[in-house]
Amino acid sequence: MMLNEKDLDLMIDEMMSDLLDVKVESVICSSQCYSQKAGLRIFPICIESHLYALETKLRAHLDAFCIQCTQVNHVSLYTISLGDRDEIMDECFTIISEFDKRVLELYQQYREILTPHFTREQWCKQNTLSVTEQKINF
Image (cartoon, rainbow, N blue to C red; front, side, top):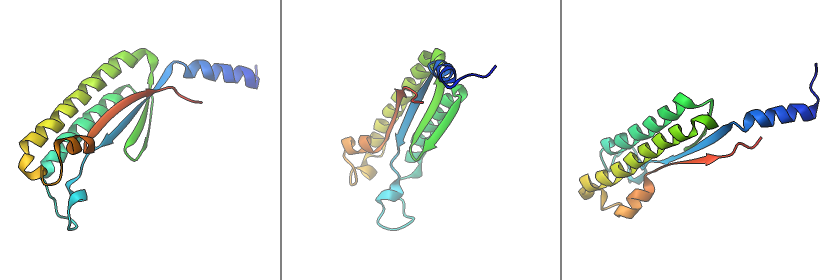
């Protein structure tokens, strides 16, 4: 039996209504971006490494649940089942909280190196990790 276009659209809408996109955006400050000379680092790579490790932890968590992932630059869309939403998002927010705490700890720990280039507020704006839910538009 062949489905007409209307029936096919209804079937697709029904399948898609059980899915949700989780949008991940990350910005992690690279010391090379603030260097006056190519290849020169103005602060230790371990600062970036701590933050990239938490970003990777978030992406690995979403990868474990996602049906599909699309990435462009610093933005990724992870398609997940609506039934797993609460569990997935709770862990995402836990990781983001850990990331935000680490950003502040790193600023405090490396304050002497970072203050010539950033205020605390600027440092926090230059290092962000976030997730938002998006309805899938088909």
